[in-house]
Length: 208
Image (cartoon, rainbow, N blue to C red):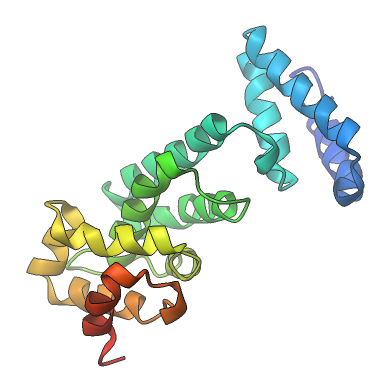
């Protein structure tokens, strides 16, 4: 019913309310049936139902049931939308809902390896902002995601400074961006730091 484009919005909302009460009690068989139905939408080319089904899994916090390639696509697309808004006019005003969307996706299981770099670069680029500032209402979401970075994601964060990209250029050219980058490094627990980047982490956090 939730994925049926003929269903009313009230029916769709009620579907979510009902299953949300039982999502932690779903049996392996029920989960398997949900996945099979989702895959059937893909196989049959029913793009509208497939998109609705993705939202269904997302709203219930069950994205880990979908395949890694589909999880990658959701993360990657959310990153692209956020970055596009970040580079557009009135970005400080428009960023928050896109930042929140990426955060909600990020807490539903580990970020696929294939999407990690795009994920880290997007968050970090938006979080340090530009010479004029950072979106204040989006900042809490960026902060939470950076605090939740895995060791591999932390490594990508520091390696970004060695590459020629918008993050390294902003940190190099704008004092406020450099200060924000340092502020975010101070949020990362030392136990999360891979050995190979321990020294550079200590350099950035010595004044925390």
